[in-house]
Length: 123
Image (cartoon, rainbow, N blue to C red):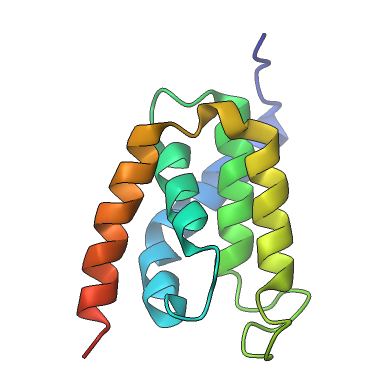
């Protein structure tokens, strides 16, 4: 049974959503060829914005996506080998928490979007 978010959780989720909607694609374009978990990352994006995804799951996913977007995190993204390790760990934990809500259509949308992003950043 899904629980409602507390006012503080709802406020944080709304801030995270604003950050994700504003900055996700820009960050993705800048890092697309450097991160091995890009397919999962974009699938999570589509799941988080899907109106059918339960509120608690959205909060978890938006938090993980906002962490990915943050310019300063545990390991700076420009550090070889370690740069995205913390992002991957946060994303992995979020996916494990809400795996049943990441649907095949989220993965299809992610693949289509990635094809476009990678084509546009190829030149």
